[in-house]
Image 1 (cartoon, rainbow, N blue to C red):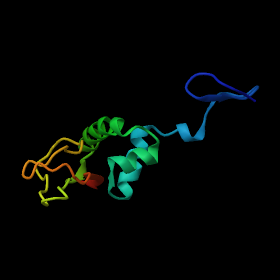
Image 2 (cartoon, rainbow, N blue to C red):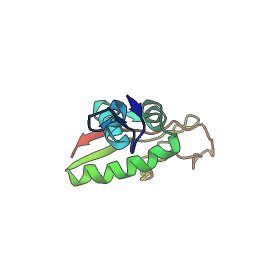
Image 3 (cartoon, helix red, strand yellow):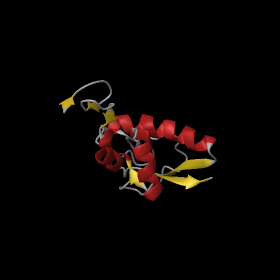
Length: 118
């Protein structure tokens, strides 16, 4: 059996190319499946799908749009300041805030995300 080919395919002699099992699901589908099971932070998602945390916000934004078209939604449990308790309820951005607008503290809990029915 020789490895190689296009798109992570494994070519067997006399056989058609097949996808390597861990590459059969897209990253967004993997994220969606995880978030349907329960809430996770971007850091937890990043670890589970083995992608950089910076990449996750883009995938979440796309997933939000896809879910909306299906009548479902990506819900966000807001970030919270660990110093004064301020909750970032009105924040639409999916990335964690860097500083609290009340106390200017930087100890902010990460928001978590989950998939819900609309």
